[in-house]
Length: 408
Image (tube, rainbow, N blue to C red):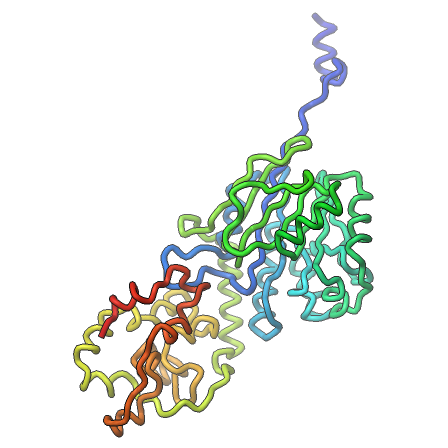
């Protein structure tokens, strides 16, 4: 008995057994494409970096956890895009994510990418380019070796003045590691399947996908394929147990998931930067006639006035003020009257008569009609609504259904 106790104290290896390998949880989010927060007028609104961080914090173990951010932060390089990219990079660093370098981030050039890399904690990875300071070609985390690829290597190397690396060379470097190989691929499912067929020794490919994530892990030549879906609306998680992927779950970042407090402070700082930079005042404005405000319309159209006053359009700008987005160009243009026209909305204090979605939001500037009522005025229809009620902002919008709520 004493001998057995001594052997047990020395470890199970003495009995020819090995301890169970730990189960790793892989958490995947990203492909924000400029969407930092839920946006739209259809309930429930989903997505956002604040909710994603909550999922990482509360739904994945702190030990044996790998967080992947697929990048594609923004779609352009304007000042607001830069603010967004910096906020997302800092959030990724806070979550301890390995971040895919995509053309979205590379397009900013070497100087701005260096800033993004620092905010993310030097966690960017790309197999498409060499010679970029601080950029890993393969990131090693626990049992995993991770790289990121784009369909056009020069879309990464060119803006960053680096040396392009072919897909084949990048995969060869990844597979040289005696680890579980993962590729974050800025490409669609068909292209991901092509990569799996040409490189069947890969274990997992994370790809882009429109809409929601798949309901289960997809496979091609034994390679697992997953995607976090579109515009940062979802997170996918799966476990690595031994040599198998299992326990896959796709999480819709709906309103039941509370905002992470730390990331919320970062987001508030981002909105302050947007306001401080005066981006709303920089919105290009065109000649669109004389705007007169709702009061000039309502006296002659009392029935329409009653409908409008009871509608959400009458309080559209207030909904932004309550969320701190009242100086955010991304949001304001569809919550006020005439933002992109000379003589339209400027601010609540300067142009209170346009601080809502009013008659002229849909029918156009009314100055000429007010001065000469017999001159025909613009009628609106489905195409007018579609300027703001897009598939992104109002995925469930149906003109016939919604028109009944404001028919006048």
